[in-house]
Image 1 (cartoon, rainbow, N blue to C red):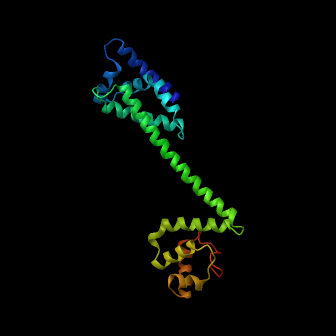
Image 2: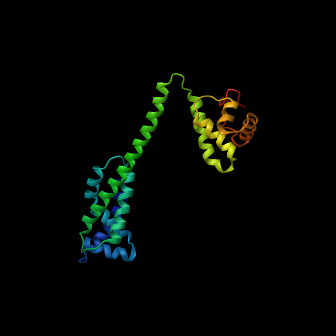
Image 3: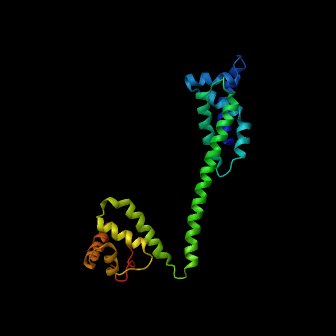
Length: 213
């Protein structure tokens, strides 16, 4: 935020000098901004309210300084465009908008962080609780699932069923077991695997089935 303040200060100072020659105040600037989106007005507003904005930002967590500054600039622009002097002072309105936006973004980021931690914790628990946990196989299946999601439209119904069956079963399956689960013959399973060798050339693990590939 400080770097943004420094970069906008020259523009802010230009307008500051002009304002000294007139009776215009901060409250009068939004109307002018709504007419021409003047960068001088935008810079002056940010720099004039910088101590207040910095104080609000300092009480916000889970966001980088760059993110905070970006959200603050966006809210200043919105406030200048929608300001109504009959409702509140411009500095009050900006403070409310900025506080609300930073709280919302911080809460959203915290929620994402918790989800990510839960996923990692779950994965680590799987590894710790199962001595026979096959990390490479787990990674292979995860890669395979992502690939299936990307090219799903190009798979036949049976090919998609085969992939889902492999992914959803932690134990290595024989052709006859896969065939029984998806309702086809063992020969059909072999044919599907040959087709998938072409469609999934790098992500079909060789050890998915006991007699696979």
